[in-house]
View 1 (cartoon, each protein chain N blue to C red):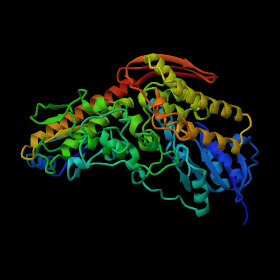
View 2: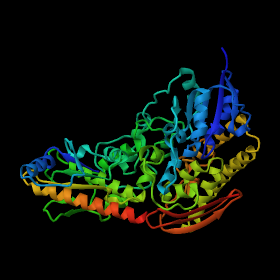
View 3: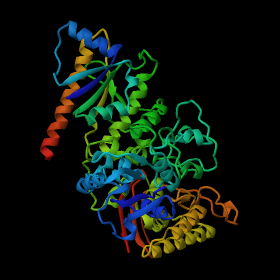
View 4: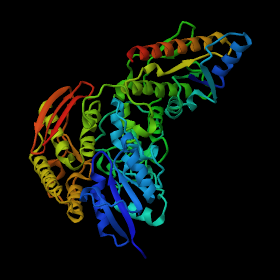
Length: 419
Length: 131
């Protein structure tokens, strides 16, 4: 059987998916013609498949049309090219992040943040996208049909059996498919990186607000003797302070086609971080900062801990320093990308942080017990955190982070300087 | 264009009564008949806006009078969250509104219609002055 000629191109955004695709080198059925991380050795020859990672903008149209002309098959790897991904949140502040499908015809997509290379190979061999099972069908938590009493922003840490939505914490599992990261295993609600339905953001919002159908909502009487919805803050607006970041985290560019009108803060990543809930910030930072995500997420956590005066335990610090060692190895690897050594990094990350978007890493400690760590869980578990308005600063060898959080838990100012 | 999702019980009934009484309303309002206000959620609202609507309104039965028990009350919460979402995106929260009407009184829905066109006008003129 002849080898499939494959070209891998990273568009914009973080390059984590491109790192995963380095592994294509080791498959016998694939001949890797070019890869963004391995330098440009592409001589415009005809290829069997172009695999795109990262989000698109209007500027990429010409390049993408070129790929369409010279490839039999265009495959999207990761949620960014599929729906705009997490970078679509920058559209809130007027950016023009687009799904690739808005610019050219696409043959298959493998969503995930990041997805598994195995799924890509399976899809390429089969020729069509595989139907994934819904996330809820693989979740151990139990759903009871009842209305919510309150909306919360952190799960109850010792409850691993009640559905997040039942607890009052929005979870997009109902509109999502099973993924490679499985945040739900780390006491972290799903934010829908693998949409299972066409308009997953509005679907998840509709689902959760229906569950909130008995919470206090402001109404007012009209002059023409009827009632209507009021404008005053109520339990709904207080309970969900960041609707866009919660329900549309990976799909804003796909679901809502108008560019947002908030003023930009000056950078793509700071546009995404500003306006998010502090409770959700570590995972968002770990995602958008790509190969520096570990460092930024840890520094952000330390900045807020400094600001509110929380001291993490000694064991927590030790595990965090292990994570920083992983970051250092990755940073060194950037000079000479190598798939085998990257696989070791991913394995180490899964040991110390749960998954690649650091779902287990949190303020003051870790959410669930780590495998292969000899200390008892009490030594590094989460402590009581008093979420309050604060400004903090922290730095490490990779970045300087300063953060301002308001009394509703929303990040108002964010700056992250990468070194 | 303003899309008004009208429930087929009270809101559509009220619109019929208003029609019999030859009452007038803004020609920009397009009524979409739905079985219940509870049938409308973020999906339908966003689809209308993505396809060029200036604003969206949902009209249901009066509180406590929903023919499907509490469909109108559930949609109230959905619309409230959507108002918050539009604010977060830098749009006017009046891009989506929720009203009620009574089938026997045509002037209730005409009052709703007048309010939604006044709100949409205010929203559009603010947008023009910002540009």
